Length: 184
Image 1 (tube, rainbow, N blue to C red):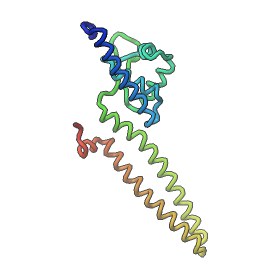
Image 2: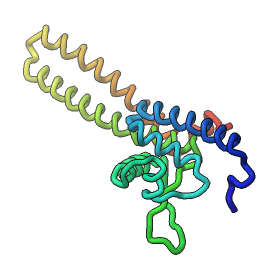
Image 3: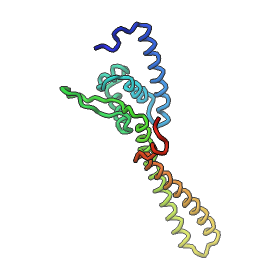
Image 4: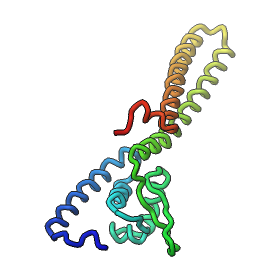
């Protein structure tokens, strides 16, 4: 059955215009998350589909190459914003968007922030260790000890912050966040 059957040209035009506005908005906002405008458009296109799509279908709809579509889909897969689905009788890969936007945000938050926090903690801990070694090798230098102690105190406070942030990330990863801030 054709879902557009019985829809007038004017009604179809209004629907397409409304969808295009949302797709543009999604594309414009995705750059906040490190996703290209075109990948955001791809996500928006897939969001309005009532069925999974192949790379060829996406490329045709967006007038882009299969390679560009593949890159965009791979990005969206990595962010858990789309997933691959199996279609009986077809050897092609099909993709559809994750419809739980709450979980999509939580997954995205976890992926991006965990990597960032771990990288920052590693740098801070290494710097703290180097500063402690410097102070230990020059115990008689009061000026050096003063500077190093202040820096170490700042780093320790920063470590406490990042450990708190990891606990926050854990609430997203475990789903506990939804007990604290329920989905509506």
